[in-house]
Image (cartoon, rainbow, N blue to C red; front, side, top):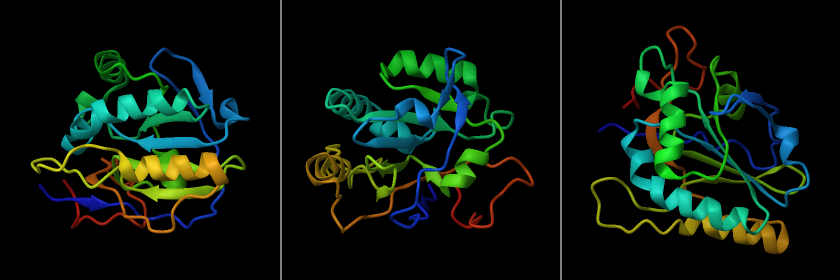
Length: 197
């Protein structure tokens, strides 16, 4: 299983705007989360083994921090023509099966993934109250086919720091996962075809 790492978008970057449909057919915008003390954006999908590995832990972490006022949103940007398991209909099934309490959006033209320089699934971004990027990195050090437990410790530390002081820890480890499945000819300049899975 070949792995792709996060691009580690520069800290302080303002959250790129988006307006994307969720699994219920509603249009969800960045501005819908105005007023939340932090925003967690997760680029994810249904079929990736790295996402499957953390799905239950992500569900629980998201629900916990939503209870603390954090806004959470999942976005799938995969080419659903080539990967039908990642279609909007399958996303709705996955959201229900996993019990995700956050909106799960579909980025059909992949422009939002490009704006965020998202590279892998899962790819985690945490923005502060002013929607400046404070954390981009792994959920924790657990990976598929390892015995390391899924704790969410890296992501928790970032969210706890932002909620307490507006700052995340300086040490940030890139997320690892399958590459986003770009449509043919739509690959961004930062795409590394050698790191695909």
